[in-house]
Amino acid sequence: MKIAEIAGITNGRVICGDELLDHEITHAFSSDLLSDVLTVNRVGILLITGVANLQTIRTAEMAEVMCILLVRNKRASQEMIGLAKNLGLVILESPGSMFAASGKLYQGGIRPLY
Image: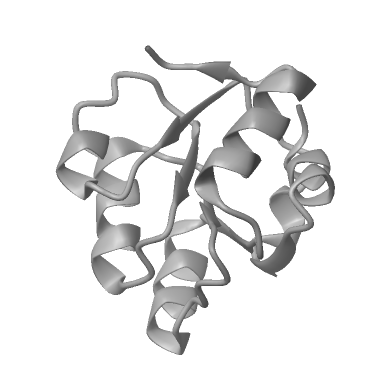
């Protein structure tokens, strides 16, 4: 599924990474426990989280996450956006819950990691 489709399905707003919206995402991981994200063993996934801080971006960098979907109306700070742009990451913001976003994306064809 293209990142642009992910934004549409989750009512997501593209915060940064417009140039990457045509990239395909096949797998996603939902977690607010960032240490769990570091166990991910697949490159270029979607991270669905409600944790909106610089550590989220740093964790995504280390785990080679391509796109972050912030749920529950969480907003990316300017520092997060700047760092994500420098690293070539996409940030989306969605008003829905993690559960709803995960379910909609699963129905749309995104596969879970585990």
